[in-house]
Image (cartoon, rainbow, N blue to C red; front, side, top):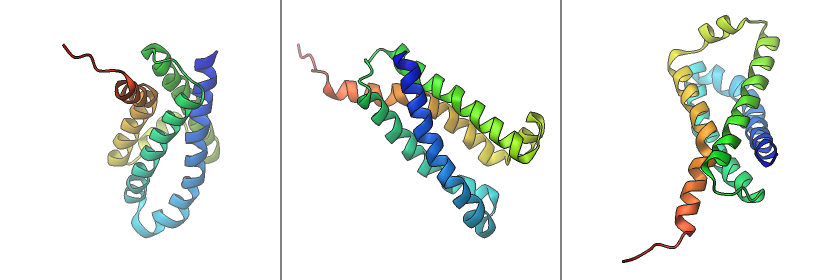
Length: 140
């Protein structure tokens, strides 16, 4: 149950940030720089948000350092994100899944897929870094 709760919280934090940044990207950046550049400019901001949200979620909910639990959080969040994003995108734009995939820019689309992998794995990655920095180092 803790994995589901943490995954839902992690998803909500990142989705909310994307929900705020999306209109800024579409209304301000796309007309000035084009779709590809606007999406690529947004990626580092979202990456920072993903790191902060993963770290905050793991610490706030006191998730144990078990890799299966931390990765589970990311996978639950990814599932929520894909359902929410595809539902919103497909409904708002009236596209099929195939049309949506075909409409993606090839460069920013690949970076987006990489961001999804990072999103799913970040609770594990930030946890390992934090756990390694707090664990005592054994010396011979």
